[in-house]
Image 1: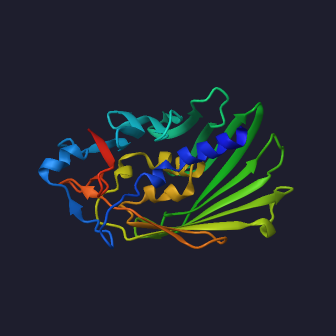
Image 2: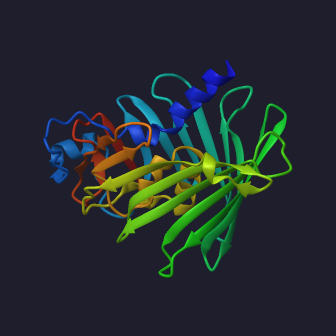
Image 3: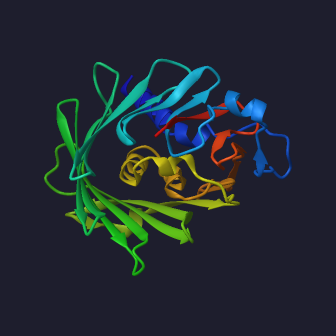
Length: 291
């Protein structure tokens, strides 16, 4: 039962990746399509012409992502399963106008997702985080270190885990970023075991996510705090790191050393202000809140 629940939670957590895979018949997909004035409203733009923040992402009649904000400041996010009532709520706490704490909790009586992140900044950038997850009366702890290149661009996120109440680190995770201008071009996600606090490279496994075919439009997730997107991607699914990009990714390729590469195309319809309002099949819709 526990294993099944973990698998189900993982399915929820990867929603940000799967919801944007549409059924367009364009080959190759044509991303540069604007909605007409009559379809724009039905696709989620609601006639907003000025500043905005992402409020909802819908699949059909189901809201799978919901963002609650006041005066443009995000204070809560809810991610829902498209097929049942499973959900995860993230609550953000601020200090000096920076996200200082994020607590994620699922809606089950015996919480598997009950993660609290504390965030530390240096010169305005996240440089470290800690995470605690008391699951089944045993605490799991992680320490994160975030690295930037000489241009101040995100370069690496390193996580060291202490699982099962261990006093020493047991697992090592590294996400290495390659950017093309302000868009994420590639993330190499490496995991390995640790022996006496030392990573064991003989146990390493690396997955790579390649992001390309970006448009020149505005990524809806740029309206949300980057700190939230960064933390959420480390918890949920590293494939979602494309949300840190300025523009909208047109294709994601998952490179698994144990199997063939998996391409996942993504397409969009836009409003007159260059914000996506849906995928081209209009099964996925982005709704915004005016500021």
